[in-house]
Image (cartoon, rainbow, N blue to C red; front, side, top):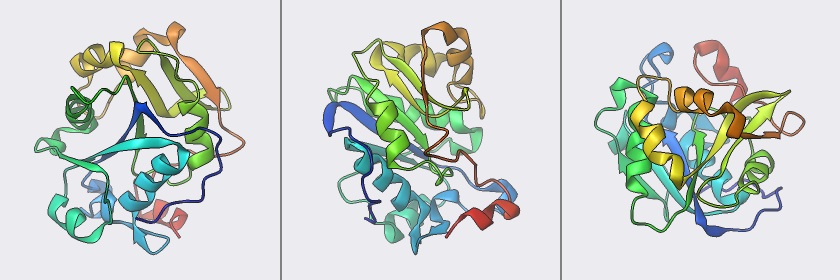
Length: 207
């Protein structure tokens, strides 16, 4: 696995699992699975999983969907738990539910959720959010100039509520909006760029 150079200060912990959502089919990219887009000479999913590891996540679960067989074949994801979401076409909410369900019984007390199509968010920003972990009640998120973004840290006490409201491409948005006062925002605007790879024009961000 291509692992970005660690720039954060967080240390690996079994309490927080990295949860990478990488099931998207790239509808506006001509149906190219986002996980398989090339970045720094390797599949984007490999880079994104490496960011979570470099930030301090000892355990990483990767939710696959579109092109899952090809991802397994091409991406070096040794040590990651690969979770296949057969309902990936229903949107990010289904992948978030599948990912959280995969953490049941693992001993994880929180999930650090990141998206495969945000390569501008590197280990330093992810480590900052990871460092906000306290216990199962933790609810924290990266912020960019004060605006909430990814990654998001969900303590296990919130998983059931998130899963119950995660539909379509909204992910945890509805739950986080309802619990806005509980969220600790971690400013990361000076160390990361939260752009998404959604369209052909966005491909220029990849290297």
